[in-house]
Image: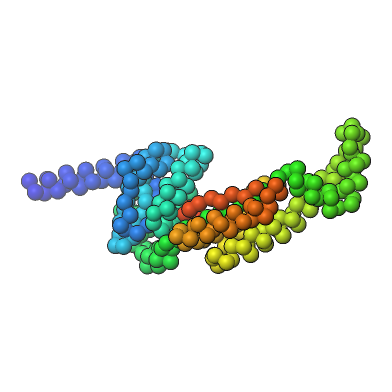
Length: 268
């Protein structure tokens, strides 16, 4: 009977192995092991978020169907929302979007155990810190007026175009557009340096981001102590006052430290 029972169990195990996997474990980021997932914490596909721990570190995870294709805007937003919310209360190492492993054992063995020392050291360095984004965008009419006032050729072209049909002044409009575009690139470089200079009084961890809009004046990511957020707000406020009517300033954060410690996506 023991032999028959063992054979039956082995057959059942073999059958289980042959069954196709229907779900995986989506991994958002790495946190200290004492972090708890809130009851209202949801991730991709509105799935509840849980914690997989290993020693002093843990992974923020949720279950996901293997048939679910990732990449929708709401997926990206859910990924960011969970990590940014966590960054407000604890250090977090964000994983790149789309990290899916087979099961929680794989999360523990292939991710947490394999990189335990690396993750623990990075979390220790992030303690008390969060990322913020300082963004500036030119006021369109103000920056156009500034360029034309500073550039004699642009001023002449503007006068040529004024009150003339578009088909008659097409070449002049193209020339003026090129002058304005080049001037904004130069001004963006200068104004970004001014933002960086202002922020270096607060932190040495800065990353100048590529512009995402043609009228962007600056976009700088900084890693700052959360306790010094008021000082950061004051710096951004002073820049806004200095550039009032010319550049609209925004401060985003606290956020997960995407620009400074994003880990590679594990293979699952």
